[in-house]
Image (cartoon, rainbow, N blue to C red; front, side):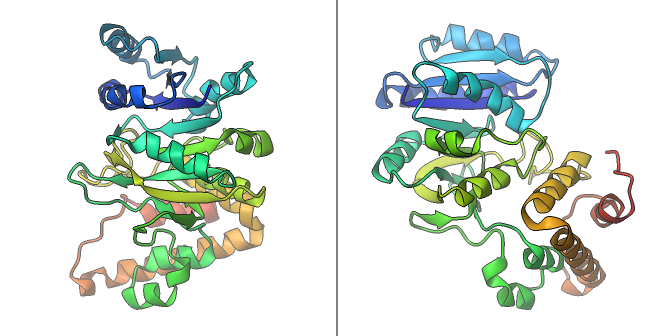
Length: 321
């Protein structure tokens, strides 16, 4: 198999079916053995019936199938359940493309990633240019977060952001293909050799930071990550998780976001630097909140973010959201 595409569904049947519709006209231009697996993370709704019917009614069976999972183990778990048996098969895929259910692939998007990986055999991971339906680009090529990036993220003051420019996690999207630290897991292609070198995604991340962790482990093993803007994918931000939907007031951050953030920092920066990063964010964000009235621009943060952050990272026990 040349390419395996994995879509993890959790109560997003309509979005998943729309994503499959966008893939359907692309399949003939992809390697003939391309397969798409939709894993259903036991949402308890009618997703299995609806997605299964869509696959059958549209004649997608030659290339698409649905895999019902016994529990909702999160994003990494949902992907791994499809990737693991594929890698163990007699003909494992050369590449695995992780694709969010809240995406719609533009014509040629998947082929652009494949061609880029074929031409650049030393690249381990590549990500698409994510954009809104109107074509406006989203930030999807990132730097690894650290203590100074947490200060910049918390404070959000233009003068400080300019000073800390090399540490900003989400810089303006590049116009050309280039090496980056990590890319969004909404559309991320991975070479089989990367899995063979570092293993699957870490299922201890329920959601968020799992792709940051994965790209960092790959980079450490000598497999760099690149951003490929020729691959254009519409991303309906936050529609699958409901946490980062830009069209709605931001909800309180769930406990798993704080847990994933802590796991990432503890794993890759250690306890001392994690404490420093936490402190920088709290100080920066407290100053930001204090200066919001003077900035004449309303804060657009998740409800109770500062208090939840302090309780989770400094006071304990973990909050329940």
